[in-house]
Length: 150
Image (tube, rainbow, N blue to C red):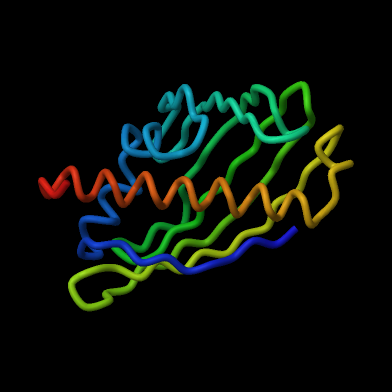
């Protein structure tokens, strides 16, 4: 399944880059992420609790940030399993200046197995879009908090 989109954030590219490469910010912004433990350079063990439809459950796996071209490009790879099934995904993130802010273009492929796979592409795509939307909303709030904006 393919997911893609574009989001605007109210901070310069360098600030957004710093935040999306900060494990603590990722832990706070990725919906349901309970643990993110560094296992090597740009590699993490992760525990994620998802509570949407039949995708609901705890997943354990890895998150890696690769192909870094600071401050504008990276590839994120996730791999996890849980009672509802298995998830493997790869996504490309590109940042570019947009006035005083940043335009984030993202595209990825998600493969699922187990009970989760039975949901169908349309439902999984909708769930993926919801989770990505929650991530960017949370990231924008952290950027505002960092700048002292309510």
